[in-house]
Image (cartoon, rainbow, N blue to C red; front, side):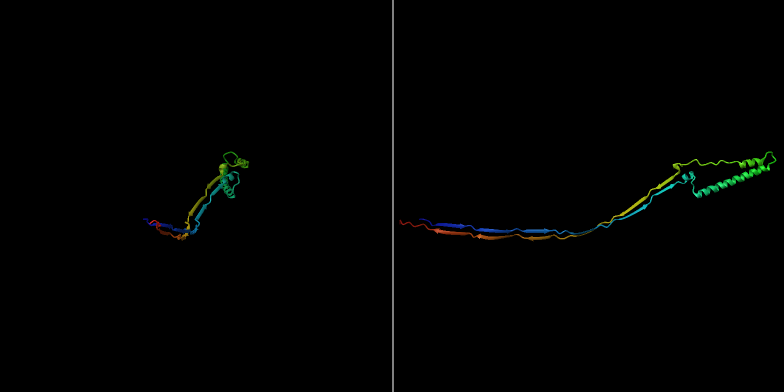
Length: 191
């Protein structure tokens, strides 16, 4: 006896996948930033230097004296000359009072008063440098600085995010198929 035979014919299913990738776009706008730097306060005070040159003594040695100095010296010299004149007159009066003590006081006084006195001229034509007095006080500089902090105003912006999710599309390109046939054995005519 022969057994019927099964004949199976199958077609595999085919799936088609279409993918759209996800998209992510991020943008970060810059923050609005304002910075203001106020100027520092600066105060500068200067005490000027002082240079003092006193040439008075050097000029006096060259006989180039100020008029007030000349007047003062002339007054002093006049006072001394008056005092000497008074002393000389008193001495001559004493000599004349003692005229009886032999001698000729009138002739000796006339001779003394008629003598020429030598005038002394200055011999210094260039004063020494030590006669010029120089004094210098340096200047003083005072700087006061008051710094100021910067004024910063910042306004941040949120990031801009655009997200498109991905997608997967599944298509059936070919459906599965299974065909089963039964094949019966052929009967032989021999019986």
